[in-house]
Image 1 (spheres, helix red, strand yellow):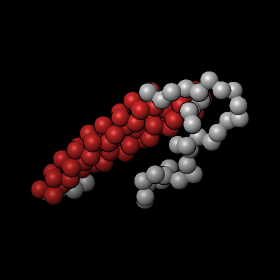
Image 2 (cartoon, one colour):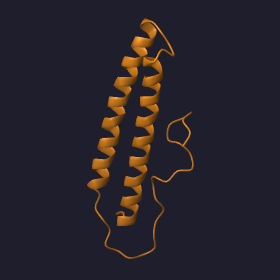
Image 3 (spheres, helix red, strand yellow):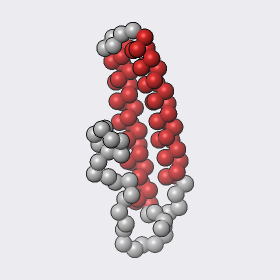
Image 4 (cartoon, helix red, strand yellow):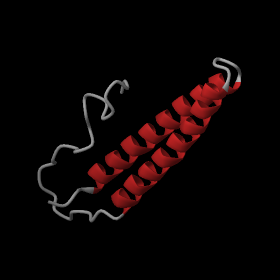
Length: 97
């Protein structure tokens, strides 16, 4: 089944929103750590881990956007199908949507 342009646009908006939300959350965590919320070598390690996590997830979001961009658009004007990326809960357990 091919996606409609509306579904592709909705998927892109969802991915961009999740990317921005994730980036803001990780930046806040790094900022807290760098401002002394935790001290010592454990804090330094956690900061480095967070930076690595941020880079890895940026790659995931970039690949997802590239996949959406390469999706073929349906030319049919039939009934709309549900957006496969619309979810009522976060795709990441323990992280609010």
